[in-house]
Length: 281
Length: 252
Image 1 (spheres, rainbow over the protein chains, first blue to last red):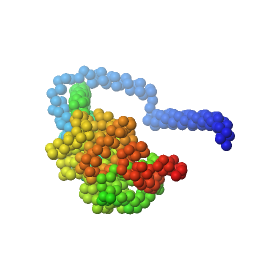
Image 2 (cartoon, chains in turn yellow, cyan):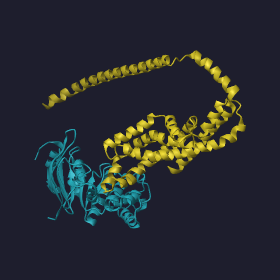
Image 3 (cartoon, helix red, strand yellow):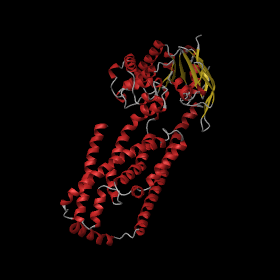
Image 4 (cartoon, each protein chain N blue to C red):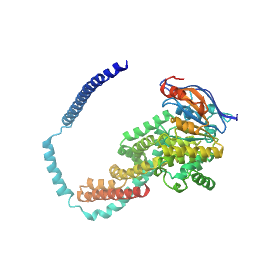
């Protein structure tokens, strides 16, 4: 018996080898087929969208000429005498963004913790919170802004609230996702000591959550500056409101100062938040 | 024989996918014992241990710990049972970003008001105690380092320190040395045995290294496919039984 087994062994190995090789070839073929399918699908989508949007290179060509003429005759050079008129609205945008971020963070902490499966009290509650967050994300901030402008009148209060509520769409999702990815083992170890829910959150979850929490909250501050500029256009206060005024009166050279101011604001906020992030993390 | 401190009565566990992880486990643990549970991977050692403090809820059966029914406990009662049971994990499960001494202080959470504990406002008394425990496991020098800066063996000693900080009457160690090299393993097991003896703590240790079980345990329980197949003194554990336990060959 033993002898026979020894004799048979090499043969079997040989057979297995060829089997493996043909299996490998089969898998490679299947993979190639998948690749071809994916690329043809992508190509088809590009062509379809191209036709659907009436995209044409000749329009692009004439368009570029128009844009260039507009930029060089209307926008440039910027009328820097308009700077003083933009200082206060710029500051207002900054306040709106900051207060908006704080509102978003507070609301998102609640909805994020409830939406994450591992920190929520019940799967149904997690689903409901996720739905709230997704719904808010689906509504553009400018629509939320319009509702508040109608309800509370023109001005920065409406813009601030729009930023605060609208931010839950992105921050709530970010917080919930970060929470769902934390190390379960560490949380379990705290639970095993007999800790309460709040103690597990404070001592087991928070240390793991902190980095992502700070990074995303600061990123939201960046985003708010840009969104606040857009919100001004519907009369929700800030630098966008003044910018819109200039554009309506065809004062493009002053408007370009507004655009430069927004650019400067974003730069400043980005620089500051980067510094804060470095200090905290 | 000394008092029974933990008893499981017909504990069974069926996972949602139908796997029977535990089949009618009946075990009595006596005060002061160091019991080692051995068996192949997937035998149900971890599942059994985690059901003792209800990290896993058994499908049926009863667990009685110091006169209290663990399986029926909820909320505050369950937390009060858990704080008397220290747990040590294979992957240490320390809060990596928190300093070592704070990880030890986490053992005190069960004794603190919820808010105070959540915000990490530990009393000076507890802090002194935690530092003293770190000295006991030979980590006084590492007290202020972040937990993830320590070596594996050191981290597991912090795990032991955290369990000790609970002033537990029972310690559950789930594969405490499975991710450590042989010399760290020896070291960690020595510390575990030492502190348990000094403080009169009963301990249950899951191990898959039979030689470690024989060296350290007062009593060995062998689990195979969710059933207890051996329960006795280390010297009663013959090679035949080990073979049966791990290799499915009966040569007794």
